[in-house]
Image (cartoon, rainbow, N blue to C red):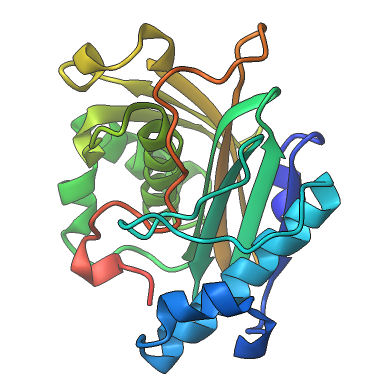
Length: 245
């Protein structure tokens, strides 16, 4: 599925079932040696997806370690992203000369719990979800909105190392073209580079999964923007009622 929401120069791999913990490199296994069993399975499967994607890209085969904050450390010339939710894990990678940042997010295709939409959406977005629900039933547009905001955050943070709250980006969803756009609003934009004011992405709902992705092109000079940091594996500090297990 994930290849449908990413451009052809991005390599990706997805898994719908867990892989054995033994697939981890020894250095990777130490990162979650004390974690609960569920976290260990998620970590192993996500790292497996990442290694498969890196292999398809032709990147060096090396352990995918983590920063002290737990963010995956991608090879120097690679930009990458990882996501996981119940029954789904995926990773996407690209050459840093072509892609400055990636943001991918997967969520269970279920409505948000009551009251959560109001806490993560702007008034215009709530009205948009209401219209989309009436005109295009069968899709949980509130959960899709949530996922787009997660993808925006994952593309934003590596460029800025700055927090981005749910209300800091205005999302517009195209229900026909399966695309979305995001505009970062003041004051969040004040401290960031002007080129990070808008994002464009794609979305897909299939097999019980809501999937969104953003690919930010690298500057034409081929240099990644100053201040690039490893892409987060995990989401922003989650709203407890909708956090992935």
